[in-house]
Every structure is written in structure tokens, then in C-alpha cells.
Image (cartoon, rainbow, N blue to C red):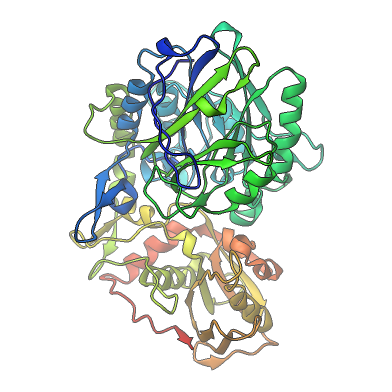
Length: 574
């Protein structure tokens, strides 16, 4: 527990920027409490690269973006310590997706080094994000409580508790508690972790925290990861627990919500805010004083009117440790509630111009030493760089290649040869730069970091057609989520009626037969119905194979040097 720094609020929908009053100058009834939050860290211990490692700070006279390099755990730790310096009442929150979809340095050790790093950063509270469920609730509880996985000294290129292998200590788990107010065991209705946390600050000040994850988690996480769990509505859950906190005498309430929105301005603006956050803000009780957002990887800083017409801070800090959201909470000791008029907020850039925290640097170096042979394993070569960006038809180089890799994966051919391969666009996390032309395991893992299994199923031709139609109005009306495909070609038209947007479907050059079965392959997240492709779940004769990264590795090895595909599988019509 710490105290607070001078901050400024940004926003357009929201209040104009103002300077916060230092605690020493605050009027007597107001006690300043500093809230620090970051979200969607995703195991980015080392500074993230490319556009995911920058924050736009402005625009040049020619219209070009002005960016600042940002992120990296050692720099995040230094910035947190600097913000807390001299502060009496301060509280640090991770707003979900601290782990999961992580670079190899963290993922190779079941994200244990990320938890260890955030223990060193003195994180006070965590809230579950959807990616906390990537490996299931039992693994998430191990992340909380500690302990080692018996993974055969690094099976599947992962190694739990590597220090223990060398005579060192076991993984002790997170020093901070996780909250999961809207995640319940279906059989009992009990939450998997605590729903709320009440923090007591100096002079008896109390602030209550409620943590929820997006209710869409079952559609965006592998089905096995959420089996036996129920995800309740975020706003309804927050309102229920806010009333309970008030009944306990806690009036100052912060909701930490792993769901959010997006806006068109810079990281401290609130321009044209859109997304789920708007509906949530309109439904969340006016008893809740601050909404800390996450999930959409956006930077924004708003004051939105609650249902009673009173402005409250609604803020999100991008992703990968690039921003720290600071809320200068004005706690009124007379009422025990938040004085919102005197509460301000700002997003701070985690620049790399400060000294790196030596404790975090040492931890990273230690795990890089453990990683060695896994990361540097050479898989094959590429003829040029490969991109994940989709063209106007919805097709991408890596989408084609990863669908080809699933189709070619020998581990799922036991029930017959694979005719069609798929990859969801969200399963491709980065480009594959050319570099020296040699692709290492670490580079391939950066492209496809989920450690999903390749699965094959039999789908009727009519189901294949239905899957292709589910690419439209997905995730929302008017939006598209175009799959990478292999062994199949088709045309589509946005202007065609719903359910008839896809035409000219050929499977390996032959017209799609709606009545016959086809063996298809893809990662288990997608083929279990993820990303709203529910028709995949109707497949039969399911066969689970190896990890998707191993299928990619085998494909690289077998096709070296791998050249960019022609991008002629999907045609967009008027």
C-alpha cells in the first residue's frame, strides 16, 4: 500500500484535463489515494517489438504518426516505483490477461516468470482476463497458489519450475490475490476466486474493488479451458456486489472490468469512444466510482456520466505494459465516499529512457538462460518476410500458411486424410520478418503463441458452408472475421443477403457437396466453436493431435525455403 502523485485527466466525452492537488495541500476532509493499473500484459517481459511496442504521442506536420518506444517489464517496474515514490496510500492493479498469449520467454515456463516479475513489482491485486483461462481453471489456481507441473523436464517445449530442476525453489504463485466475481462453478454457483477485495488505507479509509472478466470468455477461449464454469453478466454482477460492499459500510468502490472499447484519439483522449464499455457504463450502478477497463488493448481516459448523471473515471492503458493508468482518487473522510469532482486520472507512457529495474533484469536473464536450446532451435527458412495483414478479400500470407500447416499435420490424420485446413485470424499474433531467412522456434512461436492442439473433425458440406457464412456479422453486425483456409476456395459479397454471402465454393478444385463429409483440421480453440464459429462444434470423429506450433514447425521444415503464397483462395465480389 502506497500514496499518490500529481496527475491530469484527459478526455473529450469526458472532463477536460486538470492538475491534481498534492496530498500535502489537499483540503482536510480529502484524502488522496493513488490507484495504479495496467492491463493485457500478456507475458511481455522483454520490450515488445514493432507497433505493439510503441505509443503514438502526436502527428507531424506531414501527417505522420509520432511514436515513442514503450513497454518492457524492467521499465514498467521502474515507472511504478517512481510513481509511488513519497506516496503514503497507493494500490496497484493488474486488470486481466497478465498471462496467456505470451512470448516464448514466459510461455515456455507456463508464465511463471511473469508472475514472479509482478511479485517483484509489488502488484496488490489481479483480476482474471479471458487469457487467464487458456490452460484451464486448475492451472489458473496453480498460478495463484503456486506449485510445479510434472511436465517431464520440458515436454512440449515447456518447463515448469526450471529452477527446481537445478536444485532451486518451487514456483510460489502470485503474492497478490485474483478476483473473479462473475466466474462461477456451474455445479455450485460459487466463484472460482473472491469476488471483491476491500483495501484499508491510512486514517481508516476503505476502498472496495470488484473484478470481472468479459462475459464473452466462453466464445473466445478454448472450450476445455472454461469447462464447468459459468460467466455471468458483467454489469449485473458488479451491481450485486457493489450493493453488498455498501451494506458492509464501503462507499468508495472501483470496478475492474476485463472488457472495454476503443477511441480515435491519442492515449489520454476520449474521442468517439465506442464498444462494450458504453453499454456497461450505462448499466453499472452509480455507487461505483471508477471503471478500470481492459481487453481491447486501447488507450483512453474518460469521464462518462453514470446512470445518475454523475461523471466517473473510465480508463484503459493499452497493452503489453506500455501504459500505466493512474487515478488520483479523492476520498472524502466525512462520507467515506469518493469526491468525483476532485478525482482525476492520466495514462503514463512506460518509456524505455529510464533505468531498468535490476531485479527484473536479473529474473529475465535467468529465464533466458533456462530457455536457451528451446528458443534457438532452427525450424527452416523463408524466402522473404511473411505478414499477417489481410488484403481486401480477407486473405493473408500467414493465414494461408498456417491453414496449410494444419491441413498437412500428420498427427491428426488417423481418421482419414485432411481435406480442409483453417486458422482464425486472432490466432496469428505477429508477422514473421525475414531477418537472416532462418526461422527459429522462438520466432515461429511469436507468430502462433497459444499452444493450442491441432484437431481434426468430419463436417458435412452443409456445415462447411455454414462455417463460411459465420464469418459475417462476426463479432458484431457489419463486421467480418475472415478465416485463413487451405484446400478450399470461394467468393463472397458483403451486399448479398445474410446466409447467402458465400458462393462458388470448391474443395480441392471440386464443387462443395453439401451432403458428404469432409475431414477438416485447425486449432482446438476454433474447432470447438471459438470466435463464434459454433458450427465447428457439430463435427464428428474428433481426433486431437500435437501442438499447433509443432505443426507450424513441421511445415516450415518440410517447405524450406518457404515462399509467400499467391493469395488466390478468397475472392471478394461487389
